[in-house]
Amino acid sequence: MSSIVSTLAMTTPNVIKVKCARTNLFIQIQAKDNKPLKQVIDFIKTNCPGKRGTVYCARRKDTVDLAHKLKSDNIDAVFVHGGLSDVDRKKYEHAWASGTAHVICATKSFGMGIDQKDVRFVLHLSFPESMEDYVQEIGRAGRDGHAAICGLFFDHKDRSFHLHNIMQIEDKEILSYKYELMNKMAMYCTNRTCRHKFIMSYFNEDMQECEEHCDICTSNVDTIQDCTSIALLVIQSLARLQQVQEKVTVLLLTQFLMGSPTIVLKALALDKAAEFGLVKDYFKTKTGRRDLQALIYHLIITGMISEVPAGTPENPSIVIKTGNVQNLHSGSEKCYFHTTIFN
Image (cartoon, rainbow, N blue to C red; front, side, top):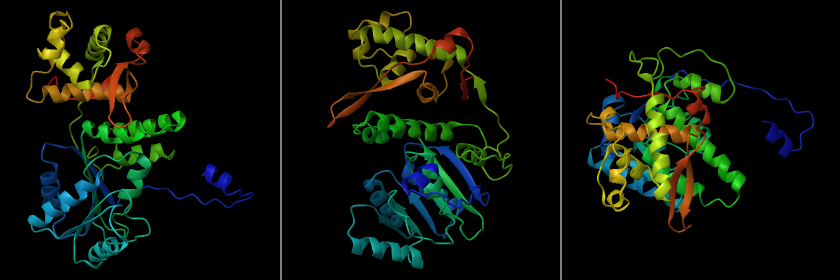
């Protein structure tokens, strides 16, 4: 708000603040599986069949593919993205607004200037690049005051799309700011705090738990656990990798920790290292590898592991290094993580 006042050179503006709480929205986040388009279809058929809704996608191609998939499953759908002509965009938006199409699959460019009151659901095929984008987009649901549902399909691997865009930014200060916004969005998706309370806190507003308007508050299972000892093993193994391999990725670290004898690890004689397979006994379940990667990404989000751009602007990549771990090593900081690996 202060930046707006400054930019517009206002001297004595009348500022009216309205809380952004929207408890008519039920907010939920679920893990994205290897068939995300089917997940969206199943979600719509189960929770809001025949209702008007929007599915936000990160990539233009996803909007097209999803709309076609929905139509093949007898769900009337259209798509819009920034590459369409004005004629086609207006045609598809009108089809959705008039009810000819129930679902519109769109990139973040969709929605400005559109005030459709009876949107019963807003879904995100991938997590947005910031909390600001997310709140604006779910805010297009339930504007008539009636109940609506907002779902997001989360996968840490979707970071790669956002990172590709962020790493193109030449201004280091802006790059750092955008990176922080992305991490806060990822933290929201993996947090076990009431969704509405987290959103309000992000925008510096107070709110009690919603009790019945999000997946966290309606869940009876608390799976937050102290993973400090495992986190320290992960950091130790990453430091060992860095001694012999300049470009360490999340995948390489995962393979090293799980004791996977890959060609790269064998070539570096890392399959003989003491840290090889150091945490595999903690991750024996069917989802063990995925759970380990989720923990690694949690350490990235919280700054204990740093991401560093590599490659070229045309073919960027991300490598990881040990981050701010002094407090973790000293015991003054703990690593609490939402996980089921000990169950």
